[in-house]
Image (tube, rainbow, N blue to C red):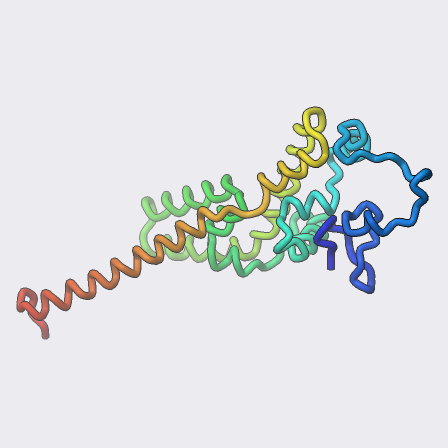
Length: 221
């Protein structure tokens, strides 16, 4: 398990032992005269301590980017990614939702690739091959969704840290991670609207067919 405040791994008692975690800031027993004067909004302090190495990503930065709701799950996937950048891990959400899941997680380039392949496939290939292609894409989304998300996370956080190191303090950088990471509600809304429209169209076609049959316009055998 990981701390939802800073992303640090919890001890055996499920307590965070990170001294810099917000949950522990009020628990230290240092004498006020000896405690270092740290201004968490100071550009100098955070530039020296957090922006020295843009290639190093901290657990708190990961939690900010993932979002607290699914932080534990994706922190485990991050550990697997650190051991093997090409790891394979099944993700039911990406399997069932396909490009909607990638859109939900703001991986827009992956969404564009999937849609392009599906559109070209349906236009240039016969129905049987298109069905096989769609099945392959669906299974691929389930198998490689987590891996692609970790690579997206790695690249995005490093890019944000690199661009922020000279212009933003630490708190501003963390807010930028939260804005650029997390999830988007737009694909969820679109999926719900499409489901409703599809249901309405199905009902309309059914009722229209029944109406024609009852009026005698079309023969019934």
